[in-house]
Structure formats: C-alpha cells, structure tokens
Amino acid sequence: MNENRLPIYFAPLQGYTDSAYRLAHARIFGGINTYYSPFVRVEHGEIRRKDIREIHPDNNGEMHFIPQLIAPTPDKLEQIMALFIEYGYREADINLGCPFPMLVKRHNGAGMLPHPKEVEALLKTAVEKFPEIRFSVKLRLGWEHADECLALLPLLNELPLSHVTLHPRLGIQQYKGTVDWNGFEAFYKGCDKPLLYNGDIHTPDDIESIVARFPRLVGVVIGRGLLANPALAWEYQQGHPLSSDEMAKKVRLLHNEVFNAYKERLQGGDLQLLTKMKSFWEYLLPNADRKAKKIIHKTTKLSNYEVAVARLFAEL
Ligand SMILES: Cc1cc2nc3c(=O)[nH]c(=O)nc-3n(C[C@H](O)[C@H](O)[C@H](O)COP(=O)(O)O)c2cc1C
Image 1 (tube, rainbow, N blue to C red):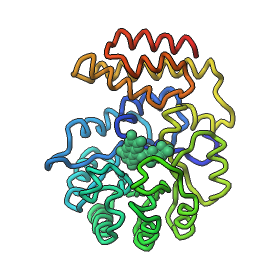
Image 2 (image 1 turned 90 degrees about the vertical axis):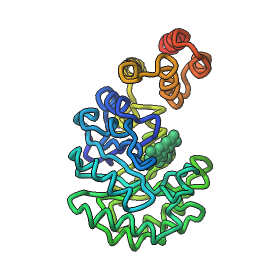
Image 3 (image 1 turned 90 degrees about the horizontal axis):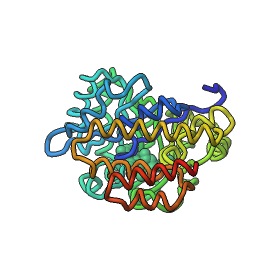
Image 4 (image 1 turned 45 degrees about the vertical axis):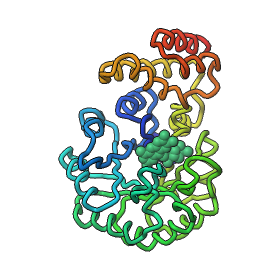
C-alpha cells in the first residue's frame, strides 16, 4: 500500500458488506486497511445466530477486521463484548450513528446522541470493563441538531479510544441530503482523537480534496462508493484507475465468489438467493447496462437473473 496515502476503511453496511462479500472483496480488489462488520445487536435478549456466524473468525480470513456493536444500555454492550472476546477480538467499534427509526426510538445508534449521559454510561462501561480492548466510535453529527456531537467531545477526548469516525449528517436525514462540511469542521477542530471522515466519497479525487481540507485525518471510511466501484480504494492507493478489462474480470470474480458463497450458506432456496443477489447489484456499477440491471431488479426467477447477469457482463 502507498505510504503517502491515507488508509481506507470499508464502512459497514447491513445487508451488503457481509462476510462473504468482505472476503471476496479483500481477495479480489483489496486496497482496504480495515473492514468492519455491520452492527451486532441484542434482540429479545439474544444475539442473532446469523450475526454470531458472520463475525466468527473462521468467516473473516486474514483481513484486518473490526466487529461493530450497537447497544442502548451498558448491559447489552457487555453481552455483545463477551462474544467478541470469546472470538479473540481485541478491537470493537461502537455504533452511535444508525438512523433506523425502530432502533433510534430505543436510544440505539443516533438515537442516543441527544442523551449525553447515556452515551457516557455506555462508553465508560466499555473502556472500564474491557481495558484490554481498543474501542472506536462511529457517530453522526447528531440526531436532530449538529451540535449534539460537539457536546460529546469532552467525553470522547477523555476516553482511551483508538479512533473516532464522523459521518457529517443528522440522523433525521437518514442517508439523504448533503453532508454538512461546517458541521464536520467544527468537530474536527475540537477532536483530539485520531479522526476518520465518512460520507459520500465516490472517487479518488473526493478523497484527495477531503484530505487537503482536513490534513489531520488518519483515514477515510467509504461505504456506498466502494459498493459502486469496488476498485475505488485500490485506485486511490495506486494513483491510477483499473483498466476496464481488469475491472470486468474482477467484477465477474467478485460476483461468482459471492454468488457461490450465498448458494452454499443460504437455506431459503432460489428466492432467498435471488434477494441477496439483488442487493449485491443495488449499488454496483451504476453505469452498467440499464436494461440488464432492471431485469435483475425485477425478476422472480433465478434463470432470468442468470441471463441478465450474462448480458450485463457481456457489455462490460
Ligand atoms: C443500507 C445501509 C446499511 C448500513 N449499515 C450500517 C451498519 O451496520 N453500521 C454502521 O456503522 N453504519 C451503517 N451504515 C452507514 C454506513 O456505514 C455509512 O456511514 C454511510 O453509508 C455513509 O457513508 P457512504 O456515503 O460512504 O456510504 C449503513 C448504511 C446503509 C445505506
């Protein structure tokens, strides 16, 4: 990896960056310093079996991988941490940014940002009860107000966190509207912890201009931009784009590896496999053959899917 370039972290995206995808991406495209799991949570008193399987070290290869958790209370955090520790992890990321209404109303993720005392109880429990773990935090500007993150700065600065990632949107924006550069700048100025930027990065130039504006950043976290162009991190690290032939070859490989992994793992038949593969294509190659993408999106038959994918690949 080029030492003059910032490390790129692959953002967690529930339903997209599962272990099959992460493994295939790391092997075929690379360029990533760290992969996160989508958040693990406690549901009806238990951690979902699927989430447990997803973070198992056997399913995460050799990559630098940090499991992420979301919890509304210290006891739930402790329950999840017990699993992370059982699996040998020494790093964990705490989600304070998820905007999904069902979770937010129980003060999970961005739903906790307007309640600094709850954030303090959660984070202090983490660092005090698990001193052997390097914790990081991923947050938004706030739920409704951009100064909610500023109110948390004294706490974040005081805790022994390995890094902080800020996505400069409000929870109420979900993933829409523009990112708030002034809001990011205000947090950047007051943050003493190693800070990573996250949000709406789609090209190596986007990374360069963010790094030029915020030279103290220690990395950038990219989600949808990497799903759209899985070579983005590699291209930034190398300083040039992947040739279109190489890209076509690698996307095929990525598709086939993910498809085969899902086929082996999923037990819900063709329809479940099809649903997963539709997600795979949702952000990928936004400029690829439109008709083929529409068929992929609409079809209820795996055979139609396979024809559409062959058509799409033929056009690459
Ligand atoms: C469908 C979806 C699922 C997501 N799941 C998670 C998650 O599990 N944990 C998390 O911290 N962020 C999650 N995010 C937020 C992303 O990690 C990232 O912060 C956000 O998409 C902004 O970055 P981007 O513009 O580079 O995609 C999710 C976003 C989307 C769109």
